[in-house]
Picture 1 (cartoon, helix red, strand yellow):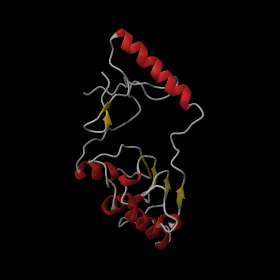
Picture 2: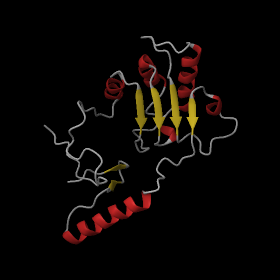
Picture 3: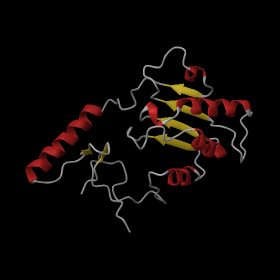
Picture 4: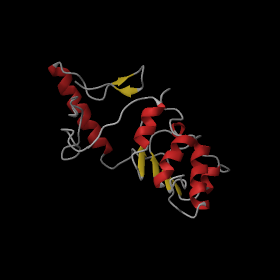
Length: 183
């Protein structure tokens, strides 16, 4: 069995360093794997992936149809282009038009919280502004009062690792756009 232990930086007192919390793991870059994951009766989906050739327009009409079975709520703190924005708006409007009913055929998405959009800044005439049950915030989800302190903790940790000849934390594989796996 693959180890789920997190060898990256974890804010002390938080997280799941031993990988004990999830009851199931899902992975894969193909649509079939994505649809299998989305079809797990999710009522909320938090999107927090980097924008790469594999994730651009990752979620569109078909994915929102699957999520509509439970009238899921979507939060996107990643990048606007992960979602086909017009399809999101249509799914939000379907929920409102269906009278908020939950049906196997899909009653649309219950709502969305968008920290990102396409394009940014979002034009005044964008349909997203008028989408029902959609909260739009400025692209600031990473901003936090402890951000500088935590960033300096990672830097300090990496300086110690560098001196000790260990692999640095939070390295990014520039070919994939993802963080490379810590050893």
